Amino acid sequence: MDFNAILLAVAVISVLGLLIGLFLGIAGEKLKVEVNEKEIEVRECLPGNNCGGCGFAGCDALAKAIADGKAEVGACPVGGKQVADKIAAVMGVEAGEVLRMAAVVRCKGTCDNAKSKYNYVGINDCRDVTIVPGAGDKACSFGCLGYGTCASVCDNDAITVIDGVAVVDKEKCIGCGKCIKACPKHVIELIPYDAEHVVKCSSKDKGKTVKDICKTGCIGCSLCAKNCENEAITMVDNLPQIDYSKCTGCGKCAEKCPVKVIS
Image (cartoon, rainbow, N blue to C red; front, side, top):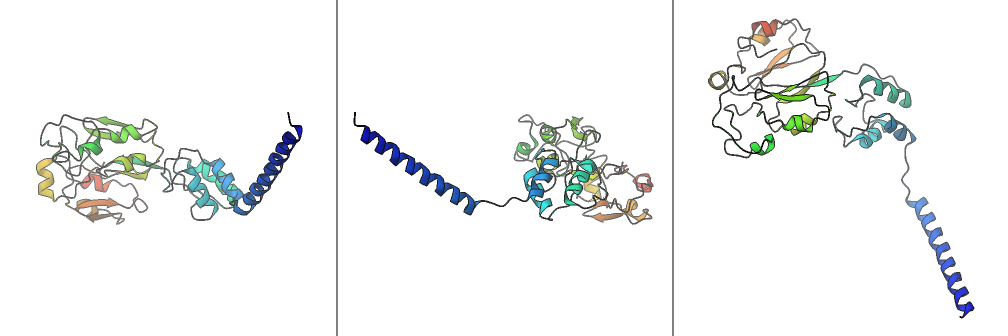
């Protein structure tokens, strides 16, 4: 056995290892990405749901945005005021008022209220149903399809389908917005948790068309807007839109609505 050859090989490998180590060390220093310490601290405060309800691609992206001053400390809809206060302490600012939000399904087109065009038998997924002929069995092209895609993506079991329409349990809802993204009909929206009234219709059709296909659809009569003393309701595409920053919860809109679509 040639010991000199062995020693030479060991020496060569050791030198190469040393050179590679030095190269990696230098490269690591040159190429390292500076991390904002506040970003790390903010990320530790966030709940980690990665729901995207804040408008960013998960908690990591939100933490970076908050640390960079591009998002409010109360931007996490899941964490609420408790998380906002923790992040505010990290950022050295006041959290301010954090408004709790909850999802609501803007449709009352149950099996009894809404007419059907045909009997559908197939995959129970709203997104798939929209690509079949007629885009679903309900006569209203704007209403809830009722196949529960929103319920399937809800991590908190806050949504159930009752009599053909999705219903949100606002006590369980954390306002993450997953159901809103999943709904192909866009009938779900976030409103303040304490909101006392909501327009339970999404149809943009004119009154006669709505009456022909749904007993509880909005007919666009504007009585709710005309009787609102705080100008909290405006008509957009034949539908009343409530500005909750102006709404006092007086209930006149619901009282005057002839089809009781405001509930």
